[in-house]
Image (cartoon, rainbow, N blue to C red; front, side, top):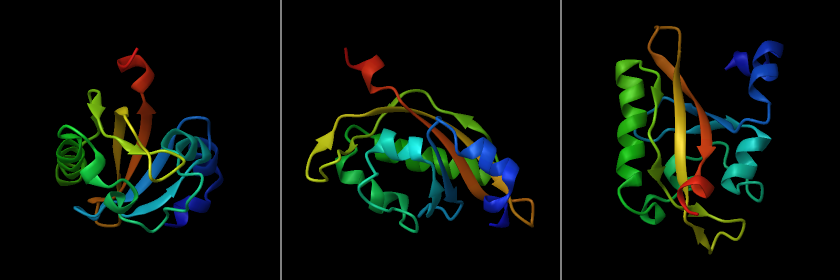
Length: 137
């Protein structure tokens, strides 16, 4: 993960666009890092979720619809096929700043696999777009 300290990486990652990097360890998808814009978009500024499995940070039982299955299937497909994926809008509810309150949420993701030493995906770079205000009006 030495790329995390690279100045070019930092310039591209730490922007106003919500981004997160996951380890490509399907089905866990361990959270490695994220930027401040991601914290704001996902209300995670009140807790440090680095090192957590994605499903610990965003409990699938609150997702609503079939958002949990869709997200797992899409992330797994990106890893297995080494495929960049732009998702259609999907429903996945998350905790608000008050973790006891779940917020209805709609998302669109850009998922980019990042190769490791063996040319297979070692990481996933996700650009997360909270589009709830465009869906619910």
